[in-house]
Image 1 (tube, rainbow, N blue to C red):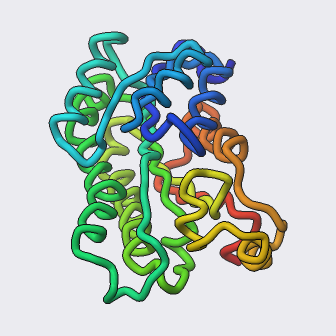
Image 2 (cartoon, rainbow, N blue to C red):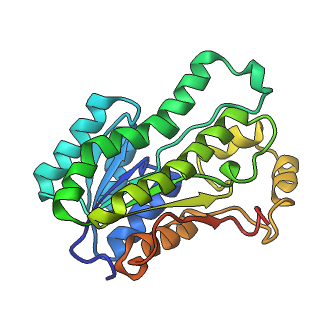
Length: 246
């Protein structure tokens, strides 16, 4: 029960890594808001873990404001914020990515971190405590060809994490990131271009431990970074990648 009495918002928690994090947090005693653009998926996970569901488009200011207001109305405070929602463009040469795709990737992967900070950091500052976790990617450390603007958005998240950590440390707020390798999530096919045994084998050959990241892997790492056990850890971008970045 390492998060007993804590409250947590996890975005993109209707599936994949976010759902894994939400489940782990709830199992450790946290009250969890399962936030996702897919309200039905959010409700299903919330029902499973005894949390609350919230429809949110993390790229829209009014939607993120509503999410923050709903959490504060429910609990009076937010102890943990996990910025997990993310998207990618399909593998293609950088100049072939449409402007609309570029804008959406940066809005969901980068602007969302700004928006959630805008609406929740003031409350954490008032409480003089809080833990923020940004789900970045190995793509921000060791970029893959033909995923250029996705790589760049995740590199942005890593730099934003470190900048946030420095600025918010005097207020008792810790900010960290996780860098997963690709996993069994709805984005896997998008990363590979096509989901075939051959493509999976090629992808897995780049991971020394020989498997994808799982929602359970992410949940375990997120639990540590957001718990009091990591009270001296801030500004870290922890690789949960089976050695991919070595």
